[in-house]
Length: 307
Image (cartoon, rainbow, N blue to C red):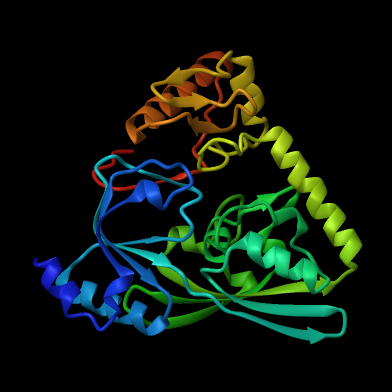
């Protein structure tokens, strides 16, 4: 398989294609080996062309958004990594209800700021999440008691054969940090959200309140992939990690945050190997002390990876 030859035959602009691209430049963790090829996708036609080419030549495809919930392994990612940069915002008002149709590559924080200016409420709790709309839908991202499932109306996507499909909210199989897109191979391209008209002062006050909370309670001054572990069904994961005496525990430059034990942070030049070793250590110690299994919330990309 000659990927280079196939890439050169693509009609897509060459300034969107990067060879041996360090993934630490494209993840909030600032960790990871190189992507064999990284291609930025800002048009559906480009996406379809690449999918067709990859299918014909059996080239593996990996999809990322803003890289905010990812740990890329030190050996990097083989094949083609597609960074979804589809951007679009359309607003349709029907009385107090406002429908916003956005490209999957739009950043959640940027959209929240736009909603503030246009006095549209419903995104305040989610405004501090650093991912894209597509990534947030895929994992049903949430904060302060609100999740993406609470505001989504429809989602358009493309399967890996290039066929377009639209899902209604009730078809999306939303669960805690999960959706149909975690179980089936679709690439989200466009999302329609259902929000409401609000008052700018109230929206701003709520966004500032949540931003202050995040600054005080979360280690946003260090690179991380956000909350490392999922919440337990009957326990608060960070509390167990605290009580196991693991706050501040380090392996190399990977550290269990002293500000919030649910976060593993990169203190400098942490490797994926160090992060995974720390994850395993935390999981083992928590199970040893409390007989509770804690699961990863972040996603791991790259080869080889053994679960």
